[in-house]
Amino acid sequence: MNDQAMPAAGEPIVPIEDRLIHPVGERAAVTPKERMTILRQLMPEQDAQARARNFEEVNLGLPQQLAMLEAERCLQCKNPVCITGCPVRVNIPRFIDLLARGDMRAAADSLLDDNALPCVTGRVCPQESQCEAVCLRGKKGDAVAIGYLERFVADWANHHRDSAPAVPTSSGKTVAIVGSGPAGLTAAGELAKRGHTVTVFEAFHAAGGVLIYGIPEFRLPKDIVHDEVTRLEQMGVRIEPNAIIGKTYALDELRATFDAIFIAVGAGLPVFMDIPGENLKGVYSANEYLTRVNLMGAYRPDADTPVLHGQRVAVVGGGNVAMDAVRTAQRLGAAAATIVYRRGMDEIPARREEVHHAQQEGIGFEMQVAPVEVIGENGWVTGLRCVRMELGEPDASGRRRPVPVPGSEFVIDCDMVVVAIGTRSNPILTTSAVGLKVNEWGYIEVDGAGMTSLPGVFAGGDIVRGAATVILAMGDGKRAASAIDAYVRGELPVAQPEATSAAI
Ligand SMILES: Cc1cc2nc3c(=O)[nH]c(=O)nc-3n(C[C@H](O)[C@H](O)[C@H](O)COP(=O)(O)OP(=O)(O)OC[C@H]3O[C@@H](n4cnc5c(N)ncnc54)[C@H](O)[C@@H]3O)c2cc1C
Ligand code: SF4
Image (cartoon, rainbow, N blue to C red):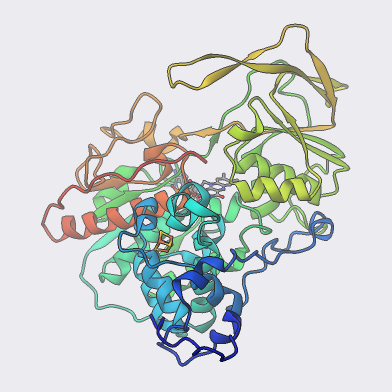
């Protein structure tokens, strides 16, 4: 770092922003003391009132000047704890240093070496509870905006990448991947790079998993996912849509045809509240609601798939899924869209940024409240009867459990209810595959290399972990690809330690 090139006594001090213009490969002349004075850059975003009625992306991305200024905030720690905070161990200071040097190509190569979908993770990772939670700069003030920088470098790479990726020489081995979410897509890319012939079987008509059917356009533009899928196809990966393994083909049929299999079917089966009135018209699971809008395009007036445009919408839950559903309802014209969550604001599991954006957009929050009945007239929802909650004694996990406050019942007027209280494993594949071991919750059991009880059949992502995060699913895809590569070559992989799981 060029800390020596400071002005001599009496020379005017050039603002740090102006020192960022320097030859590629060099660092700006910024002293350690000055570095500590640079404030965390704010993400430019669409005006809250305007975006609450459109589906365009909320965050607009840092311009290069601000990204390079933010990169200057990184201390290039000798012990970069941010790397240990990242579930896939991205070498964060390395790509930030290259960005600060203005060497965008090298920064992009460095990032893509560690993370196959940085355009996605730079937008949806819960950085505040991972890399940024442990960043040294956060000890006194704000952490380095690692997620914003990741997004900047990834978007730069996307706009500047070569037209078509190289097609590797064939290994003669074939691999089937079941499910095209982040776990499946990452594994497909890694295996294709190694020359294996990969076929991805996907139940829906489009590839991308939750990235395409769950997370809305205003958080993750679908072009980004389509581009990734197109790149995989250019590398020779074949995507077979509308193919449900366990129905269209049996797992055994795939085992007879392919040298190895990776199961990455996610955990998309909705959980309901099990309260009276849940069968009324106007009650959706968040998965169905978001799939209709995102995947089937039901927000467009000319779409074939219908969706209710509730005027007063209550969304039950406090995770990212609930936030996506409530903000979608508002964008579809709801006059009042409200989160109903049984714990307090400090315990809400959604990403902090999503909660903040929802608040800016005028979403209502009924906290420490639990639904007890969906009420209706003529078969349609007219309200959600709820009870207020308070924190009781700690449960087995040490968290104080919410308990109902006697006599506190009240009704939220609404014509639509969206249930977003979690999902679990879909049994279609797991119950039809003879000899495939699952745990008591229906998630597939794997060994340290990601192999299931069936030889040559690997699994990863949410179907192993339970509903988790994009980055953990991608990490599983990458680890499984290495293990599958070793397996098809006749070498058994060395077991890797499992990354920690994080709830969404
Ligand atoms: C609305 C929503 C918002 C979220 N927001 C965030 C966020 O902001 N940040 C974050 O990190 N995580 C978020 N998550 C969680 C994250 O998306 C998941 O953890 C991740 O997508 C899991 O990846 P996966 O590849 O295991 O499975 P999935 O993404 O679920 O993909 C599985 C794919 O397999 C297909 N499939 C299922 N069964 C079969 C079958 N039998 N045959 C063929 N195909 C099959 C499915 O159609 C699907 O396309 C969110 C989840 C949801 C639902
Ligand atoms: S911990 Fe923070 S300051 Fe240190 S290297 Fe990582 S990003 Fe930079």
